[in-house]
Image (tube, rainbow, N blue to C red):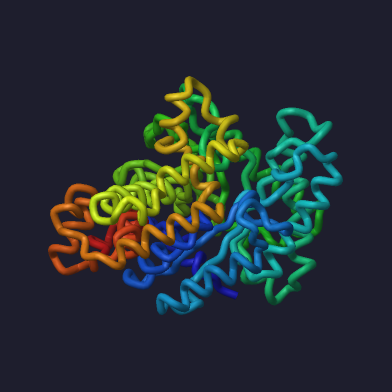
Length: 431
């Protein structure tokens, strides 16, 4: 059974630099922006939930895999995007959430996790078993990681049955960038060695055979390696293709496999294009999209301050700061430094720990109030120009309505436009 992802692989193997953007976010406005982008470009939308966002217990979003599926489908239907153009993915699925458990206990939890995703209809699954559990050797060996990935794939295949399994495409890899960006300040960063990548393939092929899932190998569509692309709180390590000449040849003998690039957030449009040309056909982006959403919503809050009486304002930035200080667990271990440095990081860091707080009921209420307040007034064009100049230009050209939701989502779509241009260089312009 064919998957829309197969066409990306086929074109890559035919020498055409084709890619696809993987939107790794659970924020409804980000998902809606991605859906609108796909609808207007005629493409598919690939939306992925990560193991800490969405799990069998609800994750930090409170959503189980079926809930996330329903959210994405509901947004797609409301925007007029046919559901056959929606691809659901699970990112970093494995024992990550249960590293304090024994390996067997963690793998039992991971098995329940991946089968919940598969049962909910997710058809792109990244098996990430690179996280050591209690008592594991550190770092984990390729053999252990590959065996655990094969075990989870076995569970998925047994759960959904052969017909539904034919729709699933897997992603493997042992050298996986830290989900959501590096926690520490980055120093020199080198790509995965080509021999290490070959070893990863060999170990996984062997483990698949040992677990009776060697027939799944043609459905492993991507390998995750480190192309030396990353970001931390204040800096971005940009792609340098001269460092990956040997690495990008490793998959020449794998007719159904391309590379998947994690942590591509904040890369330049030129770097994204080079990644796709060099066979990193899946470009994952998450914090970069919620970073852009925060920019847009805080810009709208600044506009609100000019137009709405003080007693009626949402005070969204202040509410966000207050809630982050009241519940610091999701940021304080990541942002070192003085009080002033931490304050700036909470709001502006590339790693965007703020994204974990959008589901907070008080922040959600402030966001809703902001959008309601600005929907009830006409935003003067000079004021829009001062805070969202690219959106102002589109409003002036008649391409965009000056409605607050539309303005916020269009700012997020500016990021997605760069990804779309990189993913299909033959497409000259995207709306």
